Amino acid sequence: MKIFGGYVASQDTILEELERHRRAHLERLSTYKALERQYFQDFQKLSEPAKFHYLTLLKGIGYETHWLDWCERAIKLLKSTV
Image (tube, rainbow, N blue to C red; front, side, top):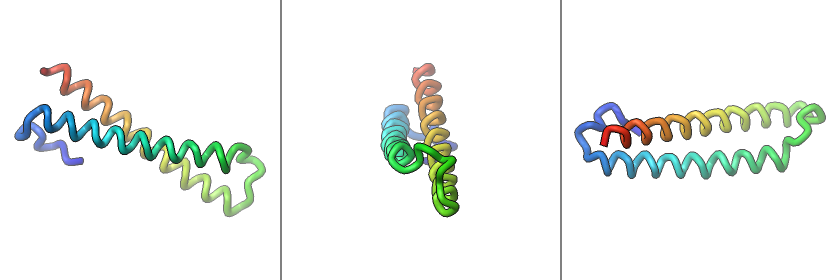
């Protein structure tokens, strides 16, 4: 999402777009967390390839968590200026 020039759009449009992004990242994070629960409960018993799969999944979880945090902060900030 490009927010740098967001001031040229209506606040409602920006908030709707932020909310859309928030929902998409929340859905993806939920999927990643389900995969973690299903396949990686005991990471100490993982095979070598599975360790790398898990590391990749952890990166995805971190990425989605970061996006969610940013979206929530942006929504809160913009709503506080309404």
